[in-house]
Length: 353
Image (tube, rainbow, N blue to C red; front, top):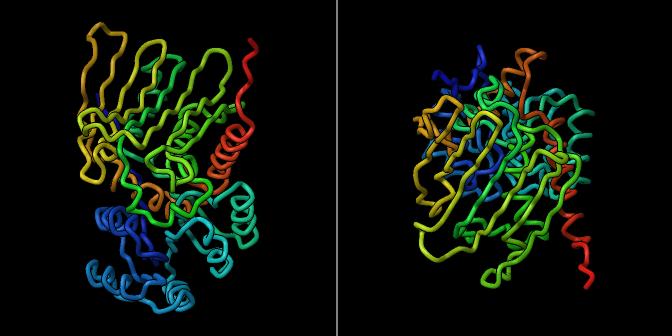
């Protein structure tokens, strides 16, 4: 079976100016851009020493002392801007970018739907060609699964499940300890977005997101989410980031079932993070051959990060290019996230005895 898991690349790639030098940049953005052959022209971070260290390590020619300097240099060079900062800071930076610039924004699209709306409005007003870095839908194993679904190999899809049972070292991202909205907005948002990629927009949601007794300093670290697609299609997300009872009992899988077959993907990077484990792509069709495993070239971190940037630059070259990570589409994911928080706050239906 031939499956395409390579991202289309722009004909004439533009250089990239990155705002932010945190772990997501060094662990994912920069390795992905190097693999894709993209040039990183400039870097800025409020922590000047961190920015300098990253620039030296990755041979980035311009390490800027101020945001304004990076924007000016990037605009003069014709760069695409890559924003990787906490979500609450996105809008302020967008307002400083030149009109009609290309910009890729690290997820989430703000801390709330109100902030997401502000970001969307700013992009429209300034004519920015903008995307949100929801990159899980660009992971090679998700691209392979999407192709099988699109080709009808699984028949009619009726069941989608995302399950995460792991011990996540949240101390690696200290800024999350200050967030009122944490697990759904910064983690399960990936799964909401990828389910939208397969099933479209849900009618409604049921959600409960909660603390863990050993992680009370974090707003939430566990969530149960049902996306309502009617009476036949079931779509569930279950996350528990506090399972610390042995790495070999951790789970992280995405499963999609249809009337003619099914796919189950183990997402290795989440298991025993940050060491991680292996990905596994298994599928079954109605051909009598049973379950089998397929080798997929590439993984979520960092191969998936090629797609949102490559797609953005393809969109800049051709306005008719179907850009999967547009701010217009990402805003709909934020609408679902907002509905999750409303559902969790409203509470369950009381049981009458």
